[in-house]
Length: 90
Image (cartoon, rainbow, N blue to C red; front, top):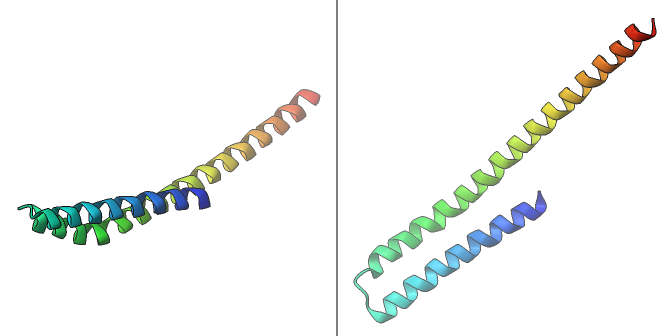
C-alpha cells in the first residue's frame, strides 16, 4: 500500500509540475490561452490531489473487502471439508 501511495503521489506531483511549467512557458511566449491554462492550473491544484486521494481510499476499501471475503470463503471451505471428513469417517 505504501508503494501505491508513493507512486500516485509521484504521478500527481509530476502532472502538476508539468501543468505549471506549460502555463509558465505560454505566459512568457504571450499566448492567448495563458489565462485559461492558469485557471486550469489553479483548479488542478485542488482537484488532482483530491482525486488521487479518493482513488487510493477506494482501492484500500476494495482491497480490505476482498481480503475479508476471501477469509470468509476459506473458513467456509475448511468447515465443509471437516464435515465431509467426519461424515465419510463414520
